[in-house]
Length: 197
Image 1 (cartoon, rainbow, N blue to C red):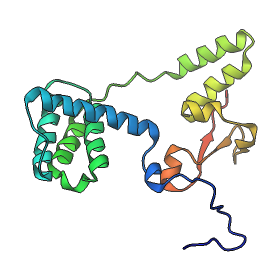
Image 2: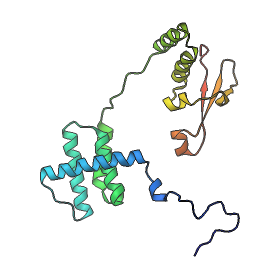
Image 3: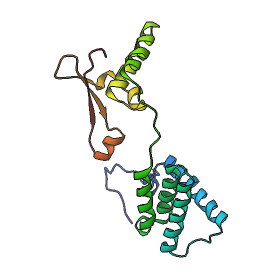
Image 4: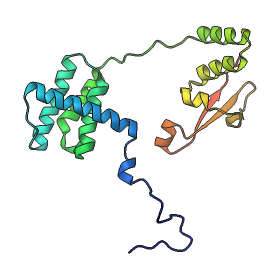
């Protein structure tokens, strides 16, 4: 039996999360579960029996993707269905046609995005906030706008993360390991050089 060496940091009585439980975030698993249920409801609706092979499952999923595409439905739910099935069955490489269809969908889907805020609008909101005595809110609008920060990055920003830049009216924001920084394995820095801010 394995016994930890003296001075080992891992205590045998502490329950650690299993690695497979950390593969996918809990929220993502919930999305997968819901999307997979939609896939099974569609199978029941069209009268399909559960697949007996990966090739048959690949065909069923490709038909489901076509159904969702033709119905002008959301890409995310289709993607979660395919990702969920792949996750639960460990079959990602065994569903090549379905993944190709999903990639095709993503290339041809016109993203629905909110129109970007203009600089004038950001200045107007910040000005209104400053006029009403809320200087911190005014500053957060300007910093968030000019540094293009995510909401969490903006709301958790501290003075210790604001570094002096090389030019006058320039600061560097050390955002640490952000969402994209974690993927690349490096800290993310943003240069903020707007004089008004």
